[in-house]
Length: 136
Image (cartoon, rainbow, N blue to C red):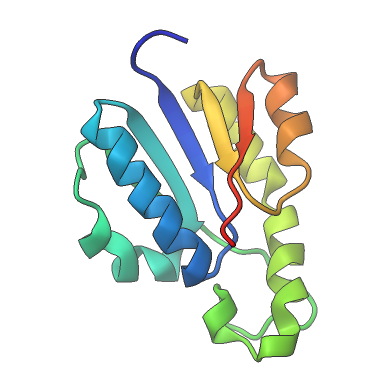
């Protein structure tokens, strides 16, 4: 990895996760790094105003697949009752194919993630480093 890098960010689809990730993305972009921020389509409009470096941070929307228990139009934890968080986690797991395709095409240097446990294995397959960044 050279002095400037390209990072993917794949936080849990809750605003309590995505907002701190976007703050980190802004800090990295301020230092000249490129960021591809993976998020649900609906959250893109809500987070755009927090992107201080739109020429370095690409908000890349994903379409959540249908999952049993996930109401139509629900894309983030705030769209669900408090007891239904696993449904978003299940939907995020099903995005693996979409994310792998993006990793193949864009060849990031590293991927930041929090609770999606398959990211390190997938990243390793493509020679990409992964960083577990936990929001507590």
